[in-house]
Amino acid sequence: MTYLVGLTGGIGCGKSTIANFFKELGAHIIDADEISHALTAPSGIAIEAIKQAFGNEFIDDLGAMHRAKMRELIFSDPDTKRQLENILHPLIYQQVLAKINQLQHTPYILLVIPLLIESPKYLALVQRIAVVDCDEPQQISRTMARSHLTEDTIHKIMACQISRTQRLQHADDVISNQNELVLTKAQVTALHAQYLKMRN
Ligand code: ATP
Image (cartoon, rainbow, N blue to C red; front, side, top):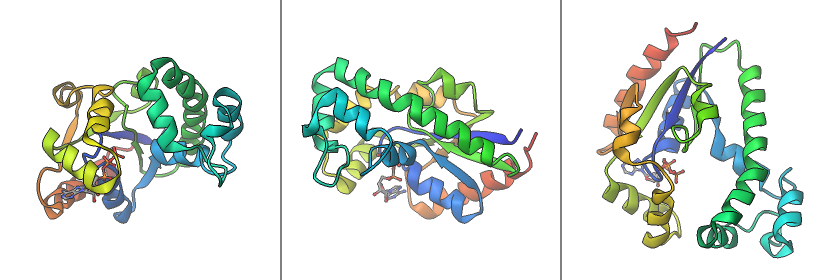
């Protein structure tokens, strides 16, 4: 069984940036958000179920899930959020397991997942938890600079995630991404060396 490290953090903390640093060092990455995007991209395997459940207006001209419309809906109606999760979560989990299986012979796998600590199924899978950390003002300004999300929407997303304090309580390793990326990268380099030695 290969060693599985869960990488998590709140919205905009820098999970993707840090996952890329690990990748550059040769780590194997499974990214739950990437899987979710592929499922809801044009011809993605969740598209038909989304169409059935929510109607054609939630599918855009290219055949992908209409993200902005869906985001608006699920934040205004928790039942629809659960409905979408019931479609996507089992498919994401299945694909994560399949990818873990394919990567059995690698020294370790980094599983990047925003809601790791909130998800008992994933918590049970990982042997170690690395938390990407920065303060809330940084999270908000970086997310706003990168996306079209309003501050209000970002607050709503943050309200669905556990608090920074709770997340840090679960961390085996904390990667501080508060400052310049060169400082973050040095922490990633040290952790990669440590994880390479941890194979079961
Ligand atoms: P999400 O939860 O929304 O998927 P994320 O946690 O994966 O976000 P990133 O996409 O890696 O976060 O980073 C958010 C934004 O902040 C990106 O535009 C990224 O380039 C920028 N960023 C990340 N870390 C730093 C840093 N240390 N200094 C400056 N900008 C940063």
